[in-house]
Length: 193
Image (cartoon, one colour):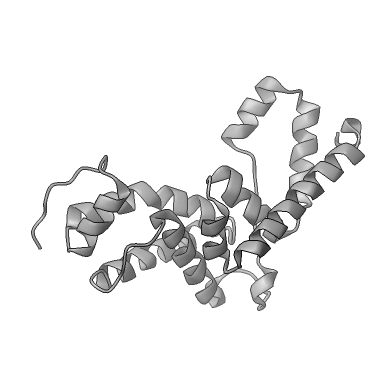
């Protein structure tokens, strides 16, 4: 395989096309660009760092093996997120969780960098209230909010990742935001302290 020396600041489409042609540098750049994002997404399903890293490695290994047969996706990011999600659920028997059903997974949502910003701009009471409300959302609502607002994906990409149709994504997103709003207005701040 001949390397073209592409740098990771090339467009994702260019990297993807070069990767499909066997360019190892482009493949390495794609891994570099998406590995951390995929890890942050995958770890929300199962809290086992090594398992998630193995799944990401498997996704990229399979991509390399099938590179000549893969087409250009509308969104490389959503394609990789979906591949990781499918891999995680396919390898479910290796999870350190007792539940065997597909819909029994946990999807944790935590405030990280945003927590710092919120603490600087708002009181600790409000931050705790928001965290408590997010903790109590159903897992699919947490996941859809994460994909939309943390990863910045549109409804089509979310539908692709979660295996839903576009209308279901709109409905679930609307329901999630409505539930957040309802709990926010309903609960006094001091209740969460």
